[in-house]
Image (cartoon, rainbow, N blue to C red; front, side, top):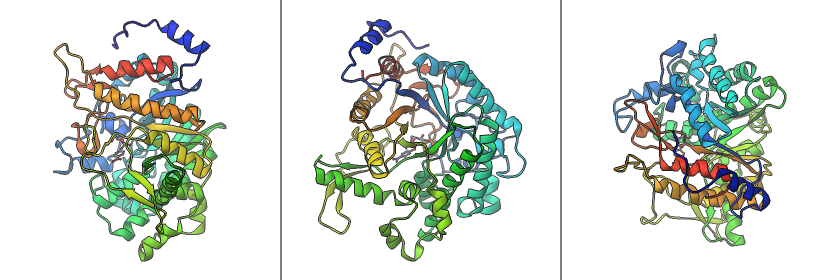
Length: 470
Ligand code: PNW
């Protein structure tokens, strides 16, 4: 149980906010939520007819995961989901972003569906609804059915986007009465780059540029096909969009020239993902740079990829580049990061709270996007319990408070951000970092599966109650 916050009567704070909006306040109706993904929390990999995924295979490959672990049991959310929904409820969240495991629904990737696998998500969604929490379902958070990898070569083949569209259509048919908000693919960029270029994520491939560019095209195509499938088969009012980790470009100093340069950089550095999804073409610079390694595609592919979306989901963790305007062909310089730039527990996670201001602002401006959700934001921490048993994760609170201050700047200036999903509800299987990186606001003991709130859970509950940065 989350302890009561001392020194504040909830009704006072809310009443005060109604009369005189605090300068740190978010718009009325701003949607607060938490986020997770299937393989990172569910466990139960052999339950109810689930097929193996590329992450089962990869995590059981010696040397692939930092602590030699895997997601076989993870947080056991498959069994403990009702308890987890009570955690969401005690935070006061009104939305939850989770992912559906494709291999639970189609154990072989294609062919006969597995109703028992889908039933888990029906139970989960019904329990969410019973607790007043809106489900936001991601169709693909990296757990490709292993059968697709073996039969057709996974994302290297055009068969995979086709199979993904069929899976999306089936889910929309089956869950359309329960789910209004769908995300297609989580972070196309990471699954392409880390999974197929660097080999650090499943399926662990290190493709040459031509192969990698083709994978990138297939993933974008899968996004577009899924948008069309959900539109065709969801009930009316169903909304769909991507959940992308846009390469974040921050004006190093806030001048009109640097802001413009950061916009140009955003468009170019996301050419194979957000830019092609929003514009229906690859930029000239992207194709020129790829040269003979450019992906093979048809004009019809580009029309599919750029199927109109209802919103854009943005995962924002860190500034990828600080940008300075320059008199060169590209129009910008990317400042190198000094070795002294700080980072959170994860080396890659440099705190730069202004990223959560600039990314949605650039996306809204460049592509006239009218509705944005922050689909992930959060940090890992070392999270040691103090003598009194509490995890005083003031580093995570510092990170969140600063990011939310910048997010609030965005909403106050009219950037159309409608909601925020904190990553993550609870500690979970952090991919190739195994269980060594904890992102939760609830601590999970991976032996007993016991959940315990960290101090940041109280911070988040307070933020939600006041609809303001606290
Ligand atoms: C996201 N980066 O991954 C994923 O969507 C989650 O599944 C994951 O647990 C979470 O963030 C925390 O890592 C990212 O290097 C991994 O910028 C790395 C980066 C961004 C996102």
